[in-house]
Amino acid sequence: MTPGARISAAIEVLDAILAGRPAEQALLRWSRASRYAGSGDRAAVRDLVFTALRRRNSHAALGGALTGRGLMIGGLREAGHDLAALFTGQGHAPAPLVPGEGSGSAADLCDLPDWLRPLWDRSLGDRAGAVAAVMRDRAPVWLRVNTLKATSQTVIAGLAADAIAAAPHGCLETALEVLENERRLSRSPVYCNGLVELQDLSPQLACAALPIRPGMRILDYCAGGGGKTLAIAPRASGLTMVAHDADPARMADLPVRARRAGAQVQVTAAPSGAFDLVVADVPCSGSGTWRRTPDSKWRLTPTSLGDLTALQSAILRRAARHVGRGGHLAYMTCSVLDVENDDQIAEFLDDVPDFSPVSRYLWTPLDAGDGFFLALMERR
Ligand SMILES: C[S@@+](CC[C@H](N)C(=O)[O-])C[C@H]1O[C@@H](n2cnc3c(N)ncnc32)[C@H](O)[C@@H]1O
Image 1: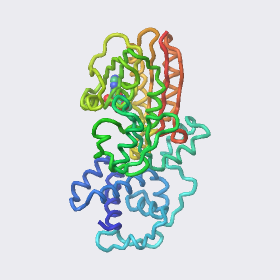
Image 2: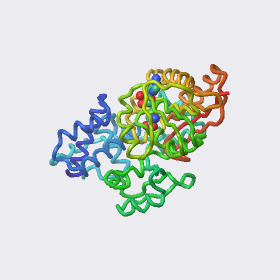
Image 3: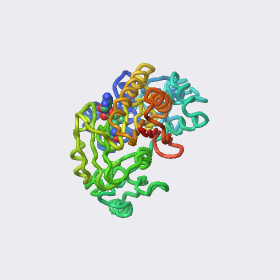
Image 4: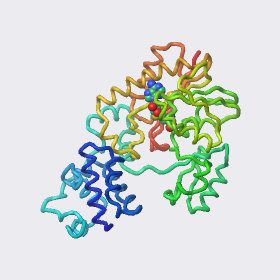
C-alpha cells in the first residue's frame, strides 16, 4: 500500500471507532476486508490509528474536525508531513485538502476527556500535566524474566541471538525493556519456551513489593489470564498458588501458560480455607494503561466509572474474607484515579476494622511503566 492508501485505511478505521466500534474490532474488520494489505501495512495502519486515539483532542483540533479525516490531517500536521503530497486523491490516497481545512490550533489542549480532568488532577496533583502528556506517547515493551527457567543474563543473550536488544531495569533486574526489534519477539525461542512473559514494568514492581516467603498459601482472587499469578510463582519455593476469577473463561489459558512457565498453579471456582496473601487485581478503568488501549480512554463515562468503583469495593470485601490472621491483602489496579485507589482503601479500612495499612504505591510513567496502584494491608 502507498502511504496515501494507508492514511485512507486509517481514516476508515477511525470513522468506525468514532461511530462506537472498539478499536481492535475495527482494525480486525478492516484487515479481513483488505487481503491485499501485508503485515507491514497492517502494522502501519494500526500505528496511525493508535497515535490518533492517544492524541484525539489535539489532533481533532489541528485537523479541524473530530472525524477520521480530521484526526489524520491533525496528526500528519503535528508530525510535520507535507499534506498536499499525501492527500492527492490519486489511486487510494485521500481527497486533496479544501481551503481552510487543517488550519486549527491545539494550544493548551489536553488529550483527556473533559469530564475526567478534575479527577485526574486531584489524583496526580503536581504530576497531573506531565502524566497526561506522557500518555500521548507509545508505551515501551517490557518483559519479565521467568526465574523458574532462566536468568536475566541468559535471556538477554538469547534475545540478542534473534537481534532483539533488551536491557534490565535499574531497580529490578528481572524486568527487561525491549530496545530493538520487538516485533520479532513472538517468534523468538526465548519467548516461545516461557523464559519470559510480556508484562509492563509497574505490575512487575508491584509483585516484587509483595511480602512473599517460602511455603506460603497465596490466592490470586481476580486471576484473569494469570499475569500476577505467574509473576508471583517464581518468587519463593514451596508456594501454594491458587487462581480464582468470577469469570472462569478468563482463566482458560492459565493452565497452559503455567505449564509453559514451569509454575504450579491450582485453578478454582470456589477458593476455600485461609490464605497468607490474597491479591485482588480488580477490574478498573485502566487509566494507567491508556498508552496501550487509547480508545478505552474515550469510552470511559462517569457512569461506567461509578459501576467499576462499586464492583471494586464489593470485590475487596469478598477477597478480604479469604485472608487468614496475620496474613496480607494486596489491592491492585492499573489506574491512577483516587476514586479507584486511595478512596477505596480508606473506605475499606473504615468498614473492616481488623485490617490495617502496611504500604501504598502509585507508579506512573514518570517513574516506572504504566500507571499502577498497590495497597498492602495486614489482617490483625
Ligand atoms: C484486571 S483483570 C485481572 C488481570 C489479571 N490479574 C492478570 O494479571 O492477568 C480483573 C479480573 O477480575 C475479574 N472479576 C470481575 N469481577 C470479579 C469478582 N466479583 N470476583 C473475582 N474476580 C472478578 C474479571 O473477570 C477479570 O478477569
